[in-house]
Image (cartoon, rainbow, N blue to C red; front, side, top):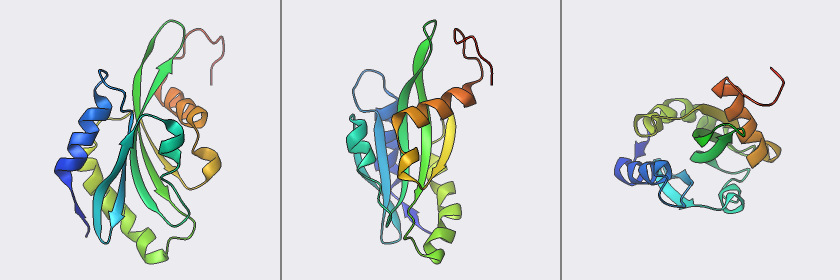
Amino acid sequence: MAKIDKQAIRDAYEEVRNDSNDTNWAVMKYDGSNIVLSATGSSFEEFASNFSDDDRVYAFLRVVAGDELSKRAKFALIVWLGKNVSGIKRARMGPDKSLVKEVIRSYAVELMINEKSELNEDFIREEIMKAGGANYGTGTRD
């Protein structure tokens, strides 16, 4: 089983959850068999640049979601499994994800993404809205 840098990841998690700063994402990657904090930031383009077909990534993202009546921060846990990752490394992600969830505990939605087309702000916001239930003001229901 992998080891995880709990303190660095916990600090980044709290930074992303803190509305008083601009940091809205944290990316965790493997360094050998260890899961470490790889990057944090505020630009979605920079966030998306952390994912490649050769990577296994866990990410925590803050998105402002809602409608004209209510806007608030919502959070997503994103699990990225690149297309070129070997079968053995793919299999390890299940047990390793439980280690990440010991630190990243509060989020609206967990998304398993392996297509760059799904790694966009609109798709993630839409998934958060679906998970959130009420969507006042749109005049539609799912």
